[in-house]
Image 1: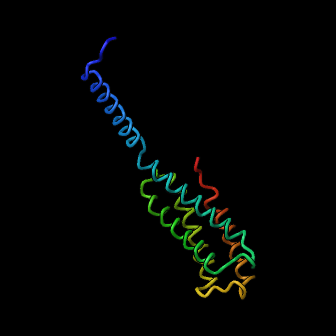
Image 2 (image 1 turned 180 degrees about the horizontal axis):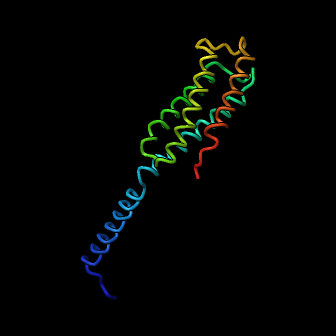
Image 3 (image 1 turned 60 degrees about the horizontal axis):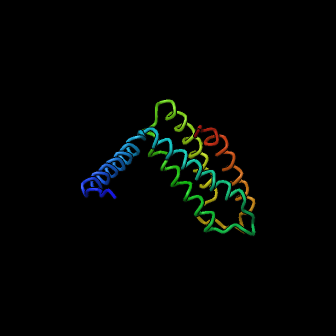
Length: 149
């Protein structure tokens, strides 16, 4: 039986470790700022859509003040993420996202302002339903049109 030298085994480990390190470096360098910003925008837009759908599905029996406020707060956080990512987008995409963001933010502020800070689910059923319908419409006319492919 042929015996392998310890150097041969160490050399193979070193080559393997270097190859693995190169793969990590290539993967880390493979994504541009624009790609990262696009992913951040698309992720935040998807989060907004999730919260809008969650709010849309609420009924008088399932809605809670805390639940509505948490969803609205989550939407605000996603809007901030979109705003933070905009400087790294290409000019064309930046314009599209900025237009969508401005349109949605304007509607969002109007809707949440109408709901007021003392949101009462039982007392404001009609107001809440109208506001949530407006929020769905605002999302569909703004971020639903953003290309995330």
